Length: 184
Image (tube, rainbow, N blue to C red; front, side, top):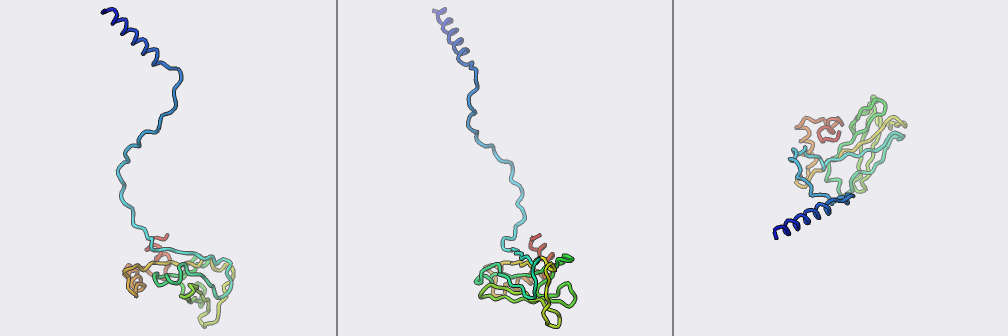
């Protein structure tokens, strides 16, 4: 009986050795469970989802009145404070609108029709005669919009201006406004 057990055990072991050897590898198994991610990094600086800028190409503009569409609907205009700038194509300076242009004695003024959300920039000399821009003289007109917010009162625009003034930001300087709001 003892010999029968030894022979049976030997046959089982030999069968296991013969069956476990195979010639070809099988297909790739399914992907395993993903490992644990590393430690979370530090939170980034808060963005300015309530600040935007829109550019209008002026490189081929000629004349003394530029008409543009406001970047928000007419019913939304009062929810924003807007800053307007034109960029000189000759030396690359940004000028605040309304304000003086780079050419001595030339100025801009601005008019917004809130009902239609249309805006107009007027170019003129200091004696109030129209100043005609020639193609290639200006490159861009940029509008920077800052949402006033739901908690702001009717004078929300003044609150934004006060905030910029207390932070030492010159609103006639596009680069200062862009740096303050993180637009560059």
